[in-house]
Amino acid sequence: MKRNERMICLVMTFLLCLGLAAGCGREEETDPAQIEGTYLCFVNNDGDGLVREEYEIKGDSTEEEIEDVLRAMKEEPDSIDYKSAFPENVQVTEWSLSDGKLSLTCSDGYLRMSGAEEVLLRAAAVESLCQISGVESVAFFIGENPLTDSDGNEIGYMMPDDFVQNTGSTLHSYQVRDLTLYFANEKGDALVPETVSVRYNSNLSVEKLIVEQLIKGPSREGERAVVPPETQVLGVSSRDGICYVNLDQEFLRGVSGVDPEVAVYAIVNSVIEGGGASQVQILVSGETDVSYMNRVTLSKPLTRNLDIVEETDS
Image 1: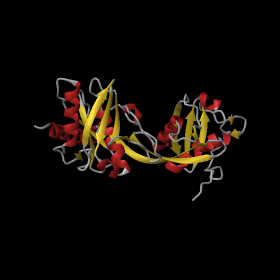
Image 2: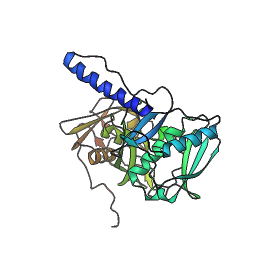
Image 3: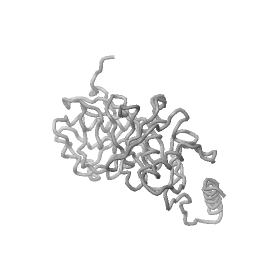
Image 4: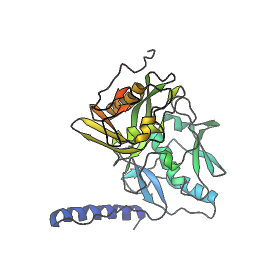
């Protein structure tokens, strides 16, 4: 039996066991998709998530293993449930490895991919290739030019941890989503929106994803972070249209040069924009009786404030 067929059989058996457990009482659930060895990443048929398939990487050297992974990722899998992350018109024309940094040069077809396709391809390639001993990070080039984001900033070398992810191996666990995040402008007195595409685990709430991305900070020049990078997310939950964002004490240190209102409403506006809540309650170590920087009271849920967003020329 082929690997793909074995994996599908495992999933079907798991679902069958769940159905039997529902009728016969609670049973201990197990994960049918645990992968003990190496694997390749493919794209699901909906084009919004990755699938891990067990795969034994072949080769007697790092270089041979890289060639094997790139060849296998380009081929269409036998399964009809997922497909190659590489579109037909996208090829890796050459590659080089130096000090653990793997550079992939791709054909011009790379530039014609949609945003979701491009992010999924990067995520699949980085995760698959970084399993190889001697490969620590991966960068993409189009011809001699390094890959850049929509603002022209070089993306550079990436590791698996650069993508929002879960270390588990559940099938269809990853999704890609465009988020509108609000950061401070250069003066720190107004908000500016930034749209980012992130890959994340489907078990992670969008609201928590947004808060984590805000802590990570902006990627564009001329924008400033609004939350200290050492801030820990203690919990994010939603109830009755209110999203409760619980942060640790580091949040109260603030970011030098950023107005308190800008920092608070960066969180509020971003969470409401991308999530399902209409209000945001910010807590610090579980407490709401807090005045942030002695300027903004956090005792009650806050609604979106667009007056603090910097106007741009249309």
